[in-house]
Image (tube, rainbow, N blue to C red; front, side, top):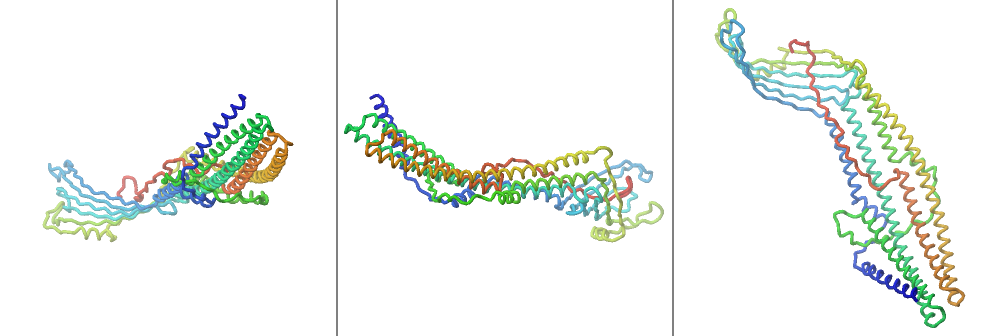
Length: 542
């Protein structure tokens, strides 16, 4: 009798728990009939992990703009004044110091050539000088000049320089960021599909557990009638009711798993700005695919080796490493540059007209406007030009040589990484293909087992109805059918998952949905544009 009441209490507890769960389930909720395509579309549109990777592509595009900025024209301008009072050092000046005051301005543009590594500059300067020097011919003195200068490397930096290396590498990094986005989309789609079929399987499992509970309740009902009639001992009724309690517990657990699976799918497809979507009930309406012919492994491996996105990214990384090697190899060359410049000058202001011997007597003045001085800069009246070659070369083991040796090793590492990735790709595709084959065989076996278990339960129930079987045997047959049906559901889910994984692994490496972005910081180094000024004799006039 103690065992009888213990079973009764277990049944009562199960009923109470089930009624509480049912009350929660009965809360009115909007229902969304969701196809697999709808789930994938929602995820691509709303998944925050994909949004992060999309923003990473914008970051890399901005870095390309940063690198291209090295070729932008640079405008510079300066305006100022100065005063210098020099002590008299010439007997002609007497005891009065020379007071010279300048107002000056300089405006120019300089830019890198997009090819060849050279730079050019064009500048205009003007100065107005007043002085109390008795030997000055102008007061005020207006001067203007226009200068064009070019610096062209002949060895180092001609084929590739730091600006071009940064620009080429940043463009490939931008392409890689777009490939990472495609990888994230593929992984997200695969994860959504997995979550979709998992929800479908857990909902089906709830149905299986519900039917199993109904079978146990029917057996308990029949046993109660027979026990009251004295046809079976009370212990058979206790056994049946204990089985009902166990099945109720299984049903509660199955519903909890289904709710967890529903939340996992929601997490992947939900719009973060729509909190009400958590209260929507998802109803997956698509049915699992039927068993199809086994995949062609060799064709799948060849496709993956040719199209997989991580291999393409690795190839870009190898090209980046080769570009760095090319740049550092070029930096080992002597820095030989052709320097050329031309300057035209003009003179204006108030000129003193003198007569007699030095320094002469001022007899009048002649005004020359600043416009006349500016126009004179475009004439060959006062030309200044230079043409030459500069050479510099590091003696001994330089930083460039050590950097080249390091970059060459990194290039070989990148090449070996591609070889390793190709092996990993072939292995993962072949493994996923075997998974499809083995899960398909499991589905066939589980389907046959479920059919036999259902037939056995039907036979055992007929034997029980005519008194040729026992409650224990019927209960055991019910348990076997439940286990067989659950195994069939699991095998079907594993088969769908294997198909999803087989399609995904031909495009991306196995991994979680949605790439995370590592903040790499600023990788583009600002490269100031040098201003060529020609080449002149040290200490000479320019």
